[in-house]
Length: 417
Image (cartoon, rainbow, N blue to C red; front, side):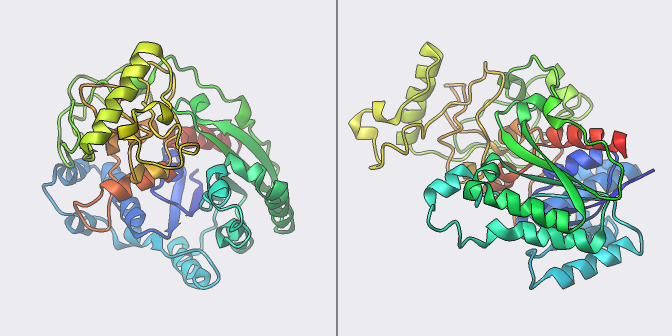
């Protein structure tokens, strides 16, 4: 039996990828950002072509042998229309729901997944704009989420957000959310989870709320008890990739430097049968930044100590606010069991994500960041324009739910349905 779901605030589809892997079937993905919608459509093409026995057509796209429009022409229009590029809110809900209803064709929804943008609840976002938080409409997008629960009445919902949701407004937002979901006919349970407990090589603390309709007999899985045994280090997602310098790399087709490893295979990031590497592209850096990167990596290699911005020579200090920026430069340590949290700011600069190999002297590539988030190598991140995707790709990756974590959650939910 297949279970159908709607993905709200879908982003690039990291949460959805995990649910598809666990056997759930997407009805619709609703997302505001146009670039992310192209990513969702490209991934829909991947799943369709692979299931239909035409995986080679998707590989041709990754190699650059056909255009995005040619790829999309090879899949049903209904599949493309399942990705709905609109902001969720009162102005667009009727249109969005009409599109979802067409996709459903009278069938019922079993599950709604997704989480509103997290910047409004995040500790960093609140620190930057403490006074603006109350006026930020993103704080209240859970009200829109509840409207979809009310309309489609799924058995369950899975709501993901940042840990800061627990303390936002001194807990008032979470309390309001709980009351609203109860009034909508749903019980809910809140879990604090860490991505590294799900096999992801990243320190990423998140909140997962599982809700279930009051008339559904559901034994909620204890997500906080999940602990996937993993003895790998961050080097596992870096070691097989070609060494490149700042400003180098290939967006489309590149061969791996070495064979795959146990972690990459077990996590379904890379299979031995595929030899297609894309988006291993490093952003260019100034000579000053590269000089700083060398200092930061050197210190880590020699002392295993993190670098403090204030320890830089005066000639390399460009920021006046040295209190907030003291940890601005940080190496992704290859010998640690997990990296620092990958966030959307990686799209603006790579200073917090310096590659550990001092000879490469650069920040992480799109593919390296995607791997830290546990995205498979055949997952292609799109831009609005074809061939112009590094910045939107990094933003999508930083905002995503790690597919590996999503899968572990989805698999446990499916066992209980």
